[in-house]
Amino acid sequence: MTDLQVESTAVDGLVVLQVKAVGDERGVVREVFRSSAFRSAGLTAGPWQQLNMTTSSQGVIRGLHGESMTKLVSVPAGSAFGAYVDTRRASATFGRVVTVDLVPGVAVLVPPGVCNGFQATGEGITPYVYCFDREWEPGMAGVAVSAFDPDLAIKWPMAVDITDRSLVSAKDADLPRLVDLPA
Image 1 (cartoon, rainbow, N blue to C red):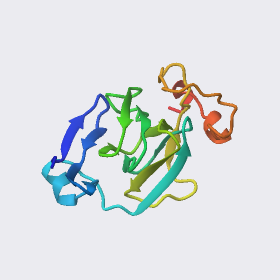
Image 2 (image 1 turned 45 degrees about the vertical axis):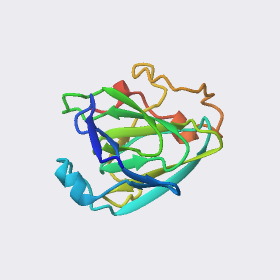
Image 3 (image 1 turned 60 degrees about the vertical axis):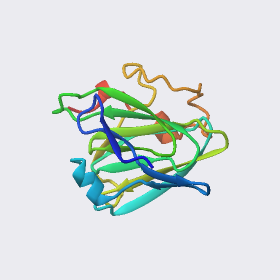
Image 4 (image 1 turned 60 degrees about the horizontal axis):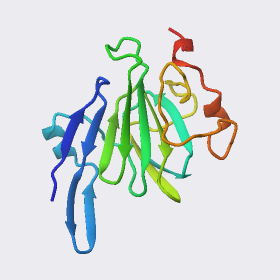
C-alpha cells in the first residue's frame, strides 16, 4: 500500500499527486480522490460537478485550456505527457510551465486559470479523465494558449505535424501565444 503523496510545483496552486494505491495478486485499487484525504493534505477540491474522459491515440495533443474551474486530471491506463501553464496575470508564477509524466497513479490538481494540455504517449489509446468543480458550459470564462508557443518552449516528447487533424484539432492549432492574450 502507498498513501497519498502531494508535491508542490513551480506554478502556484498546481499540485502533483501520487494517489493512494492498494495492490494484491488481482491488481491495484487507486484512490484518485477522497475528500477527507485531500483536506488532511491541505488541499481544497470538489465537490466535483462533472467528469469527462477523452480517449486519444498515441501522439495526439489536446490543449492548452484554462477554464474558470478547478480540475483533477489523470490517466487510468496508458501514459501521457501533461503540460500546465499559469495564465493568471496576477499570479507570481504567470507564464511558468510545468510538465508531468502521467501514468496510472499520478494525478494533477489544476487551479482555475492554469492551462492544461497533454500529449498521449502510450501505445494504442490513452484515456484521460477530468473531474471539474463546475459544469462546463459554452462561452464560460477561461483562456487558452497554443501548445506550440515558442516562448513556452514545451518539449513535447513526440514530434507532431500541427496541420494533421488526427493529432491536433483545428481549434487547438489556431490558439494564440501567451504574449498575445488580452491583458
